[in-house]
Length: 389
Image 1 (tube, rainbow, N blue to C red):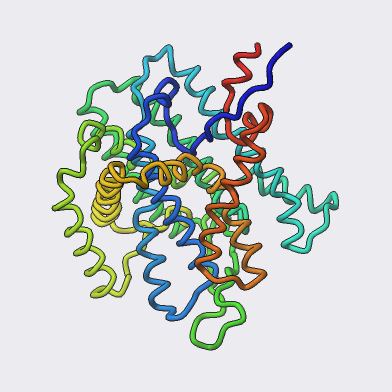
Image 2 (spheres, helix red, strand yellow):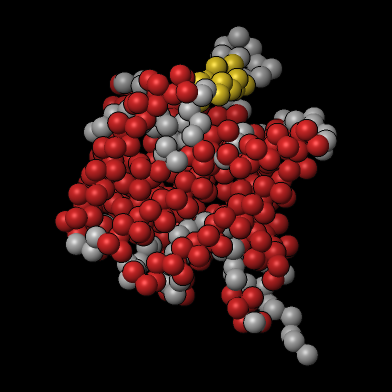
């Protein structure tokens, strides 16, 4: 008689290659915990401005400077060099671990999305929504908004792996990363100037709903919407590649924390206080228009975050933070639904933040991790399937 499989550790959003998960570094999970906390808090502020508006708006802009670039750098740090014959199985593994949960969470959240948007499960609605899901990227809105990152991450991984298997020399990889970084800025500049002549999706994004005249009621955004966020991939590949090239140095980046932390404070002070947060980075919207700052600011702030994570790795809270970091996938997918749902009850921002972390982790522990099929569908874990076969 086959014994029931024991619950497995949660699969994180990360891009850890096969075979390396057994020897994961605690600081990486802690850094991912900080990143997902920054993403959650940024989205809470973005959807529920609180007084004083200028403070919450400034914090939101600051969080956007680094949280996605830091994730991408961590992903690159965990990438392991491949031989050409390993590329096919590796891409297959990435597809299972990222795109299968991507599709599963779209289906899981669909009834919630219909309910929140007062839609019915009619054939026309389902057909229209199916087209949106297939297009992906920036057209995914509401509780699906964060899912642009999954397809962007998948394409980033596959493209970098294909290039890395060919360009083994470090100098050639550096040239490649410089080239895609420059191309990313040329591409976003071209799209911002010309996309409206091709196809434009204008989203009316609600802000400050129900609040007084202190802030904007809404902002009209002409959002550039290539499929699957492929327009963002070149910049994502650059950050990912930087993480890979910096592997020998990131292992003990806390040694230069005495430089990184003051430098980060100087950046925040100048760009935030002096320049009034005029500098913006938002990969989802393709907002990165400064060739110099788009490299310096996200990288310096990410390295500072990594150094802090390495210090926390030697403290009693390391297991708690690492556990959050190991659950980045479910938090990433579900936190928007938690924000919208708790927002209906006008809960405090702190309660909303805690719910965004605890509710997805609880769902993962009580449901996704308990059964082999849910581990496959929602966590991208095929280990038990391989054993049974």
